[in-house]
Image 1 (cartoon, rainbow, N blue to C red):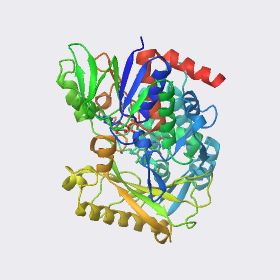
Image 2 (image 1 turned 90 degrees about the horizontal axis):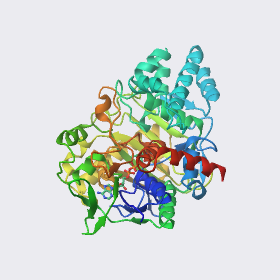
Image 3 (image 1 turned 30 degrees about the horizontal axis):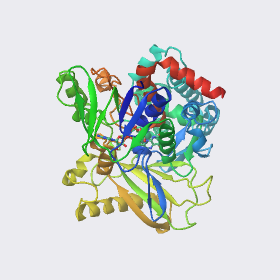
Length: 500
Ligand SMILES: Cc1cc2nc3c(=O)[nH]c(=O)nc-3n(C[C@H](O)[C@H](O)[C@H](O)COP(=O)(O)OP(=O)(O)OC[C@H]3O[C@@H](n4cnc5c(N)ncnc54)[C@H](O)[C@@H]3O)c2cc1C
């Protein structure tokens, strides 16, 4: 008889685990609290115009590259169309009144920045060699079933981004340029390990794309595949309790009173949420609960979703990061007067290489502290003051973007906003955090979330296990599923899929 695997949450982590386990003989049921599947992969539409909420671009998706291999294994590649970002500047950093594009490929990247910083050319080569070495040293990120290089991993997991950059790069402006896309991983000075920076730089530098029509297509593809393999994916099924006996979990209960028996339970929710729905049981030690509840989370965000007037805004085939302070660091520490210290501005890709953009987003950091007056409210019932707060923040942000893109303001037909509360209430992330628990060299192992728990049939997956982002989450999925079907099986299947 097939083993029953119940997965709590239909984010990328939950769905990709569901796919792999359904393919390997499990009877999978994914329970999603929301009205849409996908978690951060979700898109929404207003006045017929779509917007992405938490997955705007992906990397390493050319044939043979790591994400391509994974998407092919998950049969997602055949259901999505990718639109390549500008290879001469997939990311553009605007800092101290200059613009610095990041080009794809090591040579072009070094050439382009080296032309502006000629004395740093050799150092840029050293920097890039280091990035590549770190990405290759991780067997998971490079998808090689070999031992990871522990020495390299340990060194760069325990040294901060700024410390490593200070060793390699002499020009302080170039050091800041190189961390110009740090909103992608919410890096903190002296805290975030250099390895986190290296994985992201390597991932997008290999190749960078948007998903034509929206990243929800990744989620939809996984849902369809799970269903085709006989699994279930149920929306409006919030899990409110796991039911345990003396030794393990026997099932889960949903808010609407249904009970789902389970041989295995995988939680794709934030680990704090997982503990909330786990009853007091001697199987989980209070010290473990305390540690998980104390792990800090990455900063939350405020987003303005822009609906442009028809054929007014040329499609921007790059991601644009701007700072009005001198450096990309410390944008998470702000006052009312200094917010926003920086932002990320991107366009939605509604068709292959469109001439004009229909919609876009501006994303800036925002802490949960700002949400205090509305902390106990729910979606759609937060009141007029909340709406006024959001509008004033949006106007501030738009004013800054207008400096960089004169005329943008008058090209906007409508805009909408989201706050840390939106993410808290739609995806269950703790305090609306963008990328889940922090990676912090000063905390070391204390901020790690294990995929296995003391309950033998309860596993965790999603962005808090390994790392956030499409690759970070899929690597976490391999780790989680390996506990059930073995890493060798998964690697073999990835290789077999490539040969078909
Ligand atoms: C603003 C923003 C922009 C981003 N941009 C990018 C990008 O461009 N590229 C990239 O690679 N990554 C990006 N990311 C990161 C990426 O989206 C996430 O790391 C990833 O999607 C997280 O997947 P997950 O499965 O861990 O969790 P989530 O996507 O958070 O999914 C968790 C799911 O669990 C459900 N759930 C929670 N509690 C329960 C319960 N009790 N019962 C049932 N269901 C429950 C939630 O509703 C949700 O659907 C971005 C993230 C954010 C926030």
